[in-house]
Image (cartoon, rainbow, N blue to C red):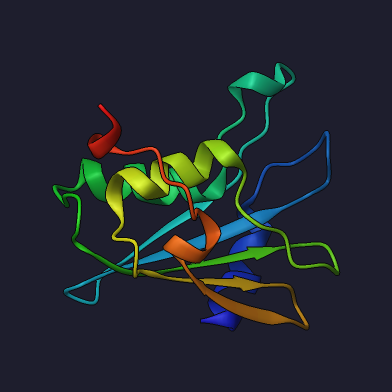
Length: 126
């Protein structure tokens, strides 16, 4: 997975921050959906790699709970965690026990979604 993520980093569009991110979302039926960050001069219009991959899977008919794990790599030398907008999207479509793998070219860490988002805002709060 790490090699795929590293190659995918080349597709990221990050001319403003130079902080490239790639993502592979694996479904329960072993399909993989990819995503990269795509920046915009209007930073609010930037799309993160995690959301890109998840929205692609949803567009292909996958539903909440259909996802086994998510792998995220960034181009820096430090592990970076998903932003809070992405964490909210992860909460919406992944189960709390879903594995979240974070990478750099030299490091790897593993968490569950629940570990990354201990106080989830979800449908139970509505």
